[in-house]
Image: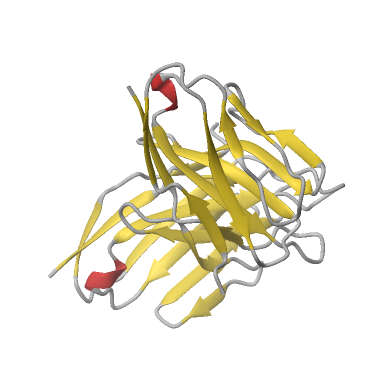
Length: 115
Length: 113
């Protein structure tokens, strides 16, 4: 059972380059999300999706795009990388029940450095 | 008041001791409460969900105090392997599936041999 798979694990970009972080889950979870984690800031929500074809902005969406064409995949696109986007990115999926938030399952993270 | 607040630590605790963390939250409508554990350079993983009656899992006990709006985590007989960052997570009752859970910044725990 793979769970949540993120690629790449490490990436170095130059300012202005674009790239896509891939995220896939095999648990049939409707809810998927992207977080970034910076020292002293905790986990901050970038974008999330409650199902295929539905996406919404989180706390820090600027500079990022997402799409959700299938239940399994939720890629995060950096449109024009900036040094402020140097961070560790986590994709997570979740299944909810009885009206309450359920457990988040995280990928192993993608460490991005923008020079 | 910040939405979810934790003492960042670090808590330096000798092996075998008992340690407790608190986490306060500002939204009184919150309904979902969790403790996640994050090892250095790893992804967060669920440690415990926190139920209104309190719950225990081996050496770990979590409690919820709705009146004072805090949750707590107690670790008894601490092990070296308990060294990690503990994240407090608070969420709403889901309405229309449009919800956001809030992570605390974490409390660092170092267990000393």
